[in-house]
Image (tube, rainbow, N blue to C red):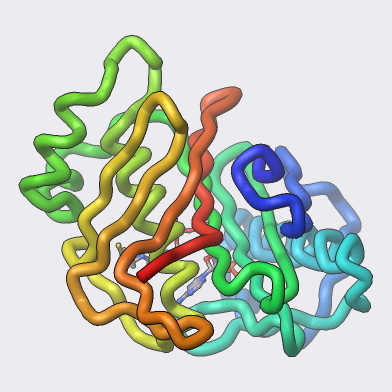
Length: 218
Ligand SMILES: CC(C)(COP(=O)(O)OP(=O)(O)OC[C@H]1O[C@@H](n2cnc3c(N)ncnc32)[C@H](O)[C@@H]1OP(=O)(O)O)[C@@H](O)C(=O)NCCC(=O)NCCS
């Protein structure tokens, strides 16, 4: 699924469950030493997916510790992103020279719990959502949430800063399966260009919504 919504130079690995006996690294599992078993399992599978994807790039299977604000620490010259939700684990990696930023997010294709949209969506986004076609069977409010999380995962390694849900104004193109996020705060400077917008794609399959951001522009 991830490969469908990311550029060809991005390597991906996805799993639908936590396989037993996956090798894991003590420099990583220290971060989930006291976590509940389900959290520990998704963390280990996420790292496993990340290393498998790195292998596709030809990068040796190094530890991927948890860094500042929870962001994975990738090998030098690599960008990447990890996501997990019930029934899905995935990771995407690329060389920074090919893809400047990467963020992926998986969510169940179910409406957001009551009250959440009000806290994560701008008034313009509420209006935008109301124009999207209900017949597609996509929980558009959840898609908005996922797209914003993908935006944050791409944004954070570029800036090292927090980005609030209400600091990006998203537009979803239901026909093109794309979205764009207009930043309402100064954007990151990438290769000498200050990005004002991040762009992404989405897909839905087997009850899972997936969003990915790998691009931006001034
Ligand atoms: C960090 C966050 C995006 C994670 O999303 P989630 O749906 O809760 O969980 P997912 O399973 O999809 O992703 C979790 C993974 O994200 C990655 N992640 C965590 N913090 C991160 C950060 N600051 N930057 C990049 N990636 C991060 C990690 O790999 C993590 O998995 P791991 O702990 O097993 O390594 C979310 O919890 C969060 O804090 N959101 C608030 C900020 C935001 O989304 N703003 C919207 C701006 S428009």
